[in-house]
Amino acid sequence: MSRLAGKVAVVTGGASGMGRATVMRFLADGAKVVVADLNAANGAETLAVAKAQGHGDNIAFVRCDVAKEADVAAMVAEAETRFGRLDIAYLNAGVGGAFGPIAETSVEDWDYTFAVLTRSVFLGMKHASLAMKKHGSGGVILVTASIAGMVGGGGSHAYSAAKAAVISLIENVAAELGPDRIRVVGIAPGVISTPLVHRGRPEKYEKQFSQQPWPDRGEPDVIADVAAFLCSDEARFITGETVKVDGGLLAQGVALWGTGRDNTFMKSAGVNRGTTGEAMVVRNLQTEGQKQ
Image (cartoon, rainbow, N blue to C red; front, side, top):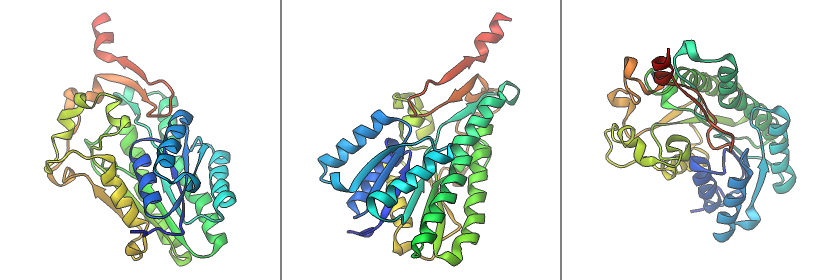
C-alpha cells in the first residue's frame, strides 16, 4: 500500500532503532526520505539497507546535530533541494540523557538532555513548519515523546521532564499550525527494544520488557506502523494528540526502574548519549559510597 506516495519526509535519529524502522516503512509506503543523524556510520549502514531493498534513489543522509539550529535548517533545506518539498517531519532523535539522583545531576548534563530532547523538537517544528507553509499544502510534524513524560516512574527526572515538555509543545503547536493544515502529533513509546534502551545487551533489560500486560516485546516496527498511519491521510483529523504505544504498560501503572532507593537511576549518575557515537559517562554511586 502506497499510503505516502509522493510525500517527502525527514526523519531525525533515522539511522538506528525506531528511526530506521520508520525510514524503511516510509520508503515502502512510497515516500522519499532524508535521514538525519549524528552517527554517520549508522547513516551509511541505513543507506546500504535501503539500497538493498531498491530504495536507493529515494533516500539521502545528512549528518545532523539536532540541537544546533544551523544543522536542522540544513536538514530541511536538503529535503527541499533534493526532493523538491517537505511534507513530513518525524522528530525522533533522542538520548537517554542525564540520570542519577537530582543532587548528583550536573547543570551540563541537564542542559545536554534538554538540548537533544526538547530544543531539537522546537527547532524541528520551527524549520519544518516554515517549509510546509512555503509550499502551501500542509504537512505533518510527528514527534517521539515517551510515556516517561506522562507519569512518574518511567525514566530519570531529566528525561521525563524533557519529554513532558515535548508533549506540551505538541499540543500548543498543533493549535497554532492547524489553520495552515499542518498536523502535529506524537508517539509515546513504552519499552522498545532499541540500541538506546539495551545498548547491545537486550537480555539485561528483560525485567523492563516483561512488565507490560501485552505478551510481545516492543520492537521498532510497532512504532513504524503507528508513525506511518499518523503521517497518512487516514489520520487527517488527528492533531495535538500523543498516542501511547506501550503494550498497556501505562494502563497498569509503571515503575520500570524500581522504586525508592532501589530505583536503578539512584545507583549511578552520568549521561547517556544514545546512539550518537559519543561515549556514555557513568559514575557508580554505590562504589563511591563505599570509598567514603
